[in-house]
Length: 180
Image (cartoon, rainbow, N blue to C red; front, side, top):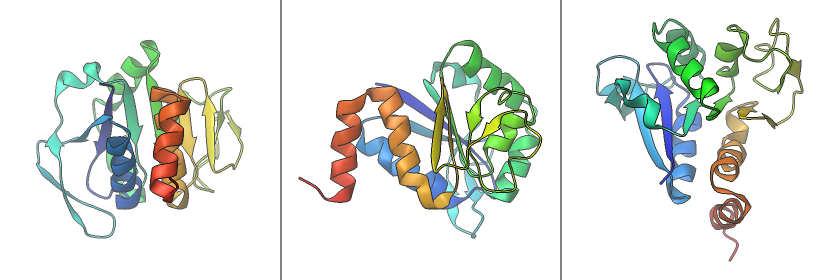
């Protein structure tokens, strides 16, 4: 079973985290929402209490790193001392990195979007030496980016397609759209 590490903390945009988690689970992916601290709960950007697991070094066993947005959440993630190590691991092992809304800024400011096509929440694309598309979702190799909370399900389905293929993507897309 493929595994998704969702890196979260206080201030995360809850739709980008929880809706994506739901799509991933429906697709048969194992998902772990890992807090960057040792706390078992976080408070989302709109004050929703979410149960999570504390950060642990077993992140290397995951197939995909998923980074949701939320202005405060992204600011907190940016200050996470192990963030560079985690991102480098996924890049060096050609694993999928998926990030939405303000989340791609964490990749951009570290130089990982240089020469890549990407999208993000408008205003967060400045200065990353990548090719900002402004599209709803974008894929460039193993880096997947999404524009905003509104497109969370489409973005999560893109992750499913990348990890599990076209057949599972279509199955889950039809399921969540209520198409038999």
